[in-house]
Length: 97
Image (cartoon, rainbow, N blue to C red; front, side, top):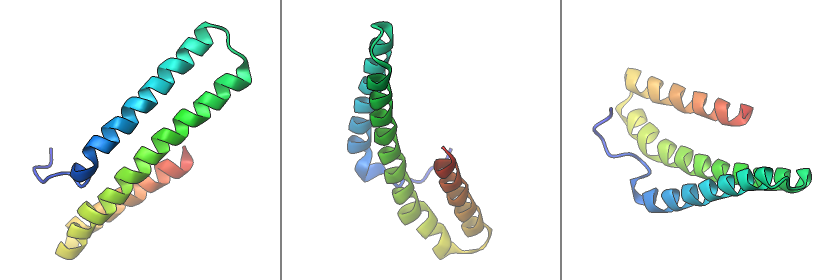
C-alpha cells in the first residue's frame, strides 16, 4: 500500500457522502425489484445510481491526475510511465463500462 496521502484526501467526505447516497439508491432499487415495480421505473433508478457512481469515479480520476500523476510526471522516469499507464487503463475501463 502506498504511504503517500491519497489525492482525494481533501474530497474524502464529499466522496463518502456520494457513495452513501448511491448505496441508498441501490438498496432502493432492490426494494423496487422485491416489490415488483414497473421495469422502466427500475431502469430509471439504475441509470441514476450509475450516474452517481460515474460522478464519484470522475472525481477520483481528476484527483488522481492532478495529484498522483502530476507528482510522478515531475519525478519522471519509470514512475511517471507507470502512473500514466495506470491512469490510461482506468480511463479505458470507465469508457468501456
